[in-house]
Length: 366
Image (cartoon, rainbow, N blue to C red; front, side, top):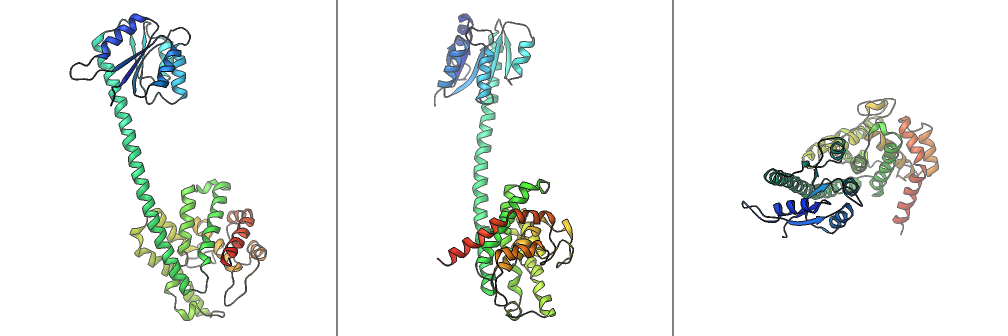
């Protein structure tokens, strides 16, 4: 690897010669530097552009053509001041010029005439500090890459488990395999509108994605419902309906066995959706009869998605409603009461919902 490059920018040749001699040769077991010189700011910028291992710049302020502040403006504009330390060299006493220079986040200020021992020690300390920062940034960046790769592997494993569990449920259910897919699409669309138009909920893109993925497990508890009830073609009795309602709590018990496989925030979305997607805004839902914003926002989103999909889907005990009719029924309160804010998002998502239904139908029959 080539030696570090050190750039001296000063219009006075004698100053450049003095500094050049201090840093070119190795001494005390420390390697020297490839020392470059520029007589004005324009030459300095050209050299900065050509250098690939610049470790320090000594910069004079008062120079012809372009002064030191012009060079600092260039370095700041190109985000180089964090990577390349700058030591201001000046013959003036501390004044507003020095104050202005420090506003650029320069590393240090040194005054003429030069004291070699002090300059060399301070310069090497600055170089080591910046190199340490650079190495730390590289290590942090490498760690972030490793963590991201691990998170992606965990996400892939979670997706596999979710898809497997959803498939098992659908094999036992009267619903088609499209149900879970549509719920995920509907949920993602609603959550995006909610994040955009109701920022008070603080939904990030990552949370929107997690809620959409977690929605696939909303009915996982149906795996514990007897076939005689789950697959009954006609209307359920009151007792049978009470059994069906237990799929919310059964699902949470089942999720608990997988808790260690999921990140905590994702697990919480899965749990909240599974338990509370049948709660209603007025407190008339189940299993806990939660009302208003006591219902987790993730469950509020999935509740409308689930009801809409049930309406537009054909079942052994009913024909499918049209997308327009299902939309109208939900807005008119015929399927229970929902959050006014979620309903606003549902209205905004009308065409999105219609499109999702049609696209999945098209793929089913092609």
